[in-house]
Length: 162
Image (cartoon, rainbow, N blue to C red; front, side):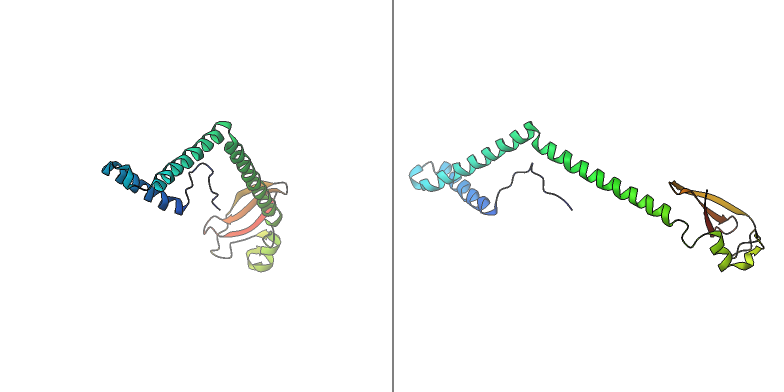
């Protein structure tokens, strides 16, 4: 979600139309060089719109010099970093908690009994390869998480914790 910046000059649509009309009238006044042909009302509106933009710009400059917007941006950044940190911490916790769920060597033995002779691993259920590679997947408070992979075909066989 994108937040609006406080450092941009916001001019309402009707102010653009009035300012444009006033500017055109002011240019006509300069061009014609006859002040009596231009309604005085438009000249006043022109200078009021210029004054409003000038005062708003001074307000923006003051906020920038005092750092009010920077303090607010710093707080928003801190909140964003803290929420991101909490989310990552939660994701790591869930990863550690659910790493072995339905993926242990006992689960693999139940689903592929032909791959074992007693307690000893014989061959991969996919390719018949006999070599298993152990890849460390991460470390959490639940232990070091390992993935046991067939070296021949690359199929993930089971998971374990140290």
